Image (cartoon, chains in turn yellow, red):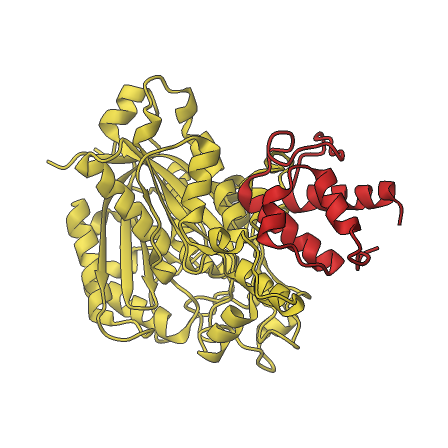
Length: 419
Length: 86
């Protein structure tokens, strides 16, 4: 029998707030974190409606540290969420914690791409070909794990997945696997992203994955309506920044350390489409969902809520709906489905980590956050928890993510003491 | 520009580039490594910024011989133009 994996801490920084609490309150209140940003003007950017983490000043306690010298926002957001998740776990106060056996599985899709963009501009002004000595350390994806290790004094294995929009979910899966193989006692897992550079914004826009600037689009008058997953007039995702982290351990270690579990990570699955550089493959997504159910030993009727990838692109939301119908059959109409990307936008690699943290909060609060800006698409006929949060009895939550490059991940969380 | 003004300018540059805490005192005698806790990457960043600001070239031999803020002040003062920021 597999050891039980439990979540003992979680944290997030999103467009709704720089903490888990502000994020959760905004989600349940039906707020949007999406705004038009003047800094992303039309002379350089193809889209200016984005989700920026608000209330996030420089941390004076980090003066002189590497985090004060490396300008990449993904490092600062990731550290913020990691510290919150770690403090939330109360593991610092636990007797018997071996800090050499705390793994860091922390990724990002793009890493310090904003730092790279700054440096390209700086090189243009310089007479020499020299770059800032902070460029390489600041751009590499695994620097986030390195900084968290340094600041939180954690020294177990370090892994930095880069699986596009499935990065965070895959980080959680890898962290759980490290616990099962005995390579670590605790795993701090998640992802962070901030990629508001012309290359990234305009790259997604040119692919037609991103919400464009369309005359008459309802986001023109109200930017908060830019992201509208599963809606009839969905027109692409809205880029956001953010970070999400969860702290995992085994139920056995949690008992030994005297830590109260918040939820069980009942199972997970990851697979590869092997199909196309960017277009999702329905049968592989279906299989990933099925495999996660099998791995978690959760029956169809025990799934109380499905936290969707739900990007607000025409293709994803149709494919994901169809996959759910294939997996659950008629029972699918009894499963509430929502996408918090309607409120937060899409923070790429961080999104599924934020959704993992939110899934834990869903179980703790027995409340489902809504899909904002929802207008029914006649072709998509599930229960998308339109526009208002819903209190229901939650036993298990599925949270799915699918990334460019054909990388899929599904996590299944379950209430502690489910019977 | 007199020495005191230029020292203040360079000290501010040291503080900005290396993100020293406000409580850290920077004087001409402050050594980069022992007094200011500046590591080798910080030194490269600092010298790169000094080169840009004062439009001078600092070669590797000169970098190796600089121990304190005063050494940097003397290098800048050795006839290599004014700060663009001044």
